[in-house]
Image 1: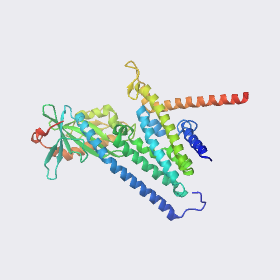
Image 2 (image 1 turned 135 degrees about the horizontal axis):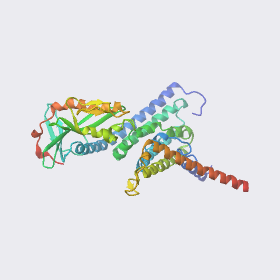
Image 3 (image 1 turned 45 degrees about the vertical axis):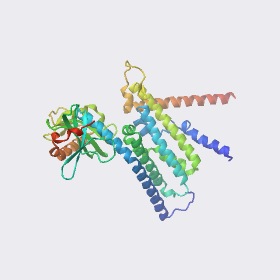
Image 4 (image 1 turned 135 degrees about the vertical axis):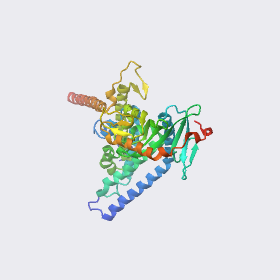
Length: 214
Length: 217
């Protein structure tokens, strides 16, 4: 491959995580943090940021070490690497933004078991060069963060009547309390999946029709 | 990973050993680097919580107890270092309004750290705040998220010891109603408060003997 082709391929690996293989809307991975901490936009972005840090760090290291790690102990090695980054993220959040850390609480440590992260190591980073692994991790992280943000923002707007803590509707708005409680997470996720899939179906139909017409 | 031959046991142990070594190294480095900042945040959160658990508190004195049982008073600051054993709280005119005690102990998942206000005259708690906990989201975390549960601590007598009850109908001035679905976390709070009480209540300094001129917000 020529250098520009490599760039092109890396760019594609990046893009696929955002839409075509979006970790939340297409692969439906990492649902635990997705549902648990997305009751406000700020929490969603903080969780997305922490996950991005862990995913980029682990993908980089594991791709770099992919020839040295025997396959018998690969999963244990991945988990040790991931846990190290999660612990670092935990301390850093505590030192830099204690309020956010308090809000996210136990879910920061639970990033260790987010299947999205281990999944990318096993399925991608351990088989590709550092450059592609980073592109893939960045794409997946952005896709995950966008999904978290969509869910968090829509739940905050309906459940608190605000976005980023700024009231949107004035005092006459009656907040939908259910939206900030766990059931609201499931309802909103279901709606977002519905919209996403409906849109995809339509595009598929349209392209089929086009092909037939041609 | 591409070789079909199985790796030798030595190599497996070496790989995991190295991974563990580097993991430990990085964890310790990050911990050492972030610790002072985390402690400073904690000290500030602690100071803010004192104002919440002692009604009417305007000025604080941080109290440290030395080995020989003497009390040393200090203006609380956001520096890192050991947290004070107690706080004495005063109103605007310098009149003593109550103590704030720190307690910690095992919760359902991890250590729970809390702070509560104590009125030595009425022998009762004046409020409680959970400073740190990792209780189950949605259940155990109600120990600080459920306003009704937290409000119960605003007026609880400590003689006889605070008691946890499950029956909604039970009444008394030394009881705390457990949170449904979070009995262990509720019980942990009551236990921490009672243990802290038995450790400190007989040792509390006389507020009149503390130097008032060091009182400062």
